[in-house]
Figure 1 (cartoon, rainbow, N blue to C red):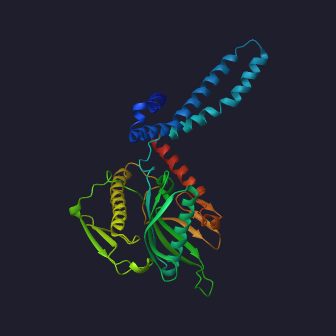
Figure 2: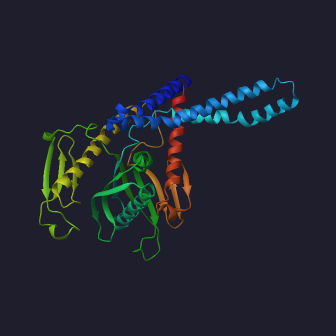
Figure 3: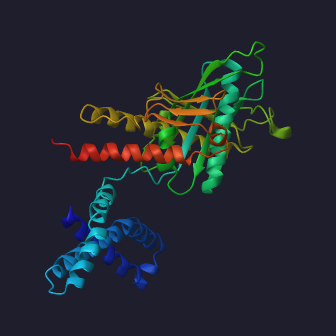
Length: 357
């Protein structure tokens, strides 16, 4: 581990020198790539330097224990009592920082929220969960672009697809994929009985063109009149676009923009991300035979969370987390839940990395 840390520190210092080179400054694209690599290495290098400083201080204090002066020895013992418990904690932090990174963590996401079992009540809950994500996105200053939505007759959402753009969006949102169950008394329920409904959430890392190669011959593109809000152009111009990827029969449509070109661009972004997810799932299943994880399987058939409104309780079934401030969560206060999921996933990965082969 420490040989690798020495190498990373050398690379970090070399990148720092490169950033001061006028020749690199004249090539902004290359400069940004070097700066990003330097920035990504910084937490690991700083933690390594903290570890080394701590280790050296402990060695110095141990040497002082042999001093003839009793006051010096007492001071050394106090120092060791303070420093030695810190060393394994910093070492544990280093192990976490050295875990292989999820290459998708820096990506934007395509998020799809769909009403499932429960009819109108499910559509209302789908709208509330999407609003929860919008509030969470506001806290992180992410940009949100709705690509398509299908309202229900009662003011909910049958389905909605959007792109969230910002810093490390996928790293924060990737554990939201799955079935979200709601338990509450619907507004239409006259006898006060609690009903159970469900929605599905899919979080896809947005794929770049280099991630997924799509041949034009594999696409069928249809245009049709938009429906819903949009003014006079609605139902009069063929601005809405439906793209079918023939080899996989994947269908994507977008009608959010009045421009057919813009709708096509947005639909292609979603299509690339869906095809990328299919490839990721194939790779995940190949690895699953060797390693299993309770979090992050990406299986949307699995119930991941229950929102119990009568008890003001959120339960995440993957990690046994219970939160009795559901009202706050629905206002976008999702960070404690996400942090707990990330911590659990990190612990599982550490366990897998250190397990005997």
